[in-house]
Image 1 (cartoon, rainbow, N blue to C red):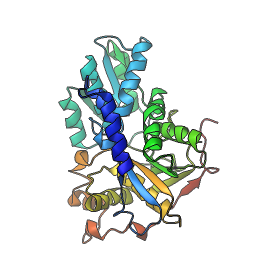
Image 2 (image 1 turned 90 degrees about the vertical axis):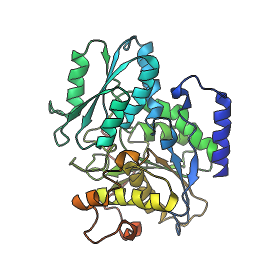
Image 3 (image 1 turned 60 degrees about the horizontal axis):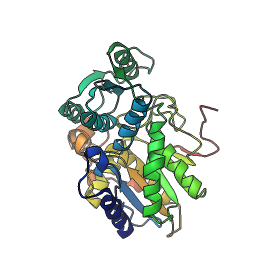
Image 4 (image 1 turned 30 degrees about the vertical axis):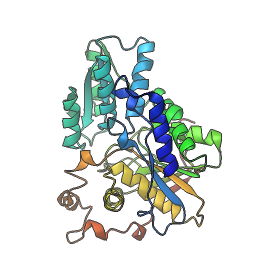
Length: 362
């Protein structure tokens, strides 16, 4: 979109010709039309390219605000250690900011996360601890509990706890929401976000609803996560969904929650990459599939869907972008090709409307 590109140039120009450090480059990501992918759908669908943040994901936006809030509160002091459970992207954002500010990092990851993500965090100088995926969140082996133990036992440690840190949704209220509103000239009618900690959708959604309560907020949830009402069970899609309710997620913000399977998430990302030339991660496919399913039922050419595309596909080359891996995991048939995938062939088995969405915090 021309308006989005122009707005990005203005935002970058306002920062000056030379930025003080890499964290100052976070934000001002562009909106890009996805007309080829959404061909035949009446609403306009555009993607917000969060992989264009310097650390490669939407999680860059929350890292510095969480660190600076901890510094102000005296929870993180010079020479301290940041300990956090992460699927990878939050770790990169924190590692960037930690390098600038002189902190050490220890990140705890579930073993389903790609090896590329672990290698990337180590490249930033972080220590990476890997834990089993298929255990209860309260199990001592889970990456939540292991990070708790490391934070207690490590001198000078501070745990950001992105799942319960108010600076997470506030960062999106302060930056991502205003960017979307301004880039669309207030014409946005639908926001679509893949649900992880819930901070992104809660912060952006709250900002947009304050400007126009009629905007529809759509959450995309991987099958196996709690947000769409299921009992939690293992799934392959990385970086989104939860097996517990983070307090950073305000379920009242979402008007619709769409459940998305691993197959639809991953093949949607692959098709979108082929058609739009945007190398995207699995959570992008989740959000895009949900957006297209909602949009296909709207006969309104003036509707404008903004889909937050959280990260690049570079961290998933050996999994999502490997046909062999997809076949080995039952996501692609033995004689099926990725180009044969048709998102119209399936519909979500669960779409929760606002009055059906569980409100875990009353």
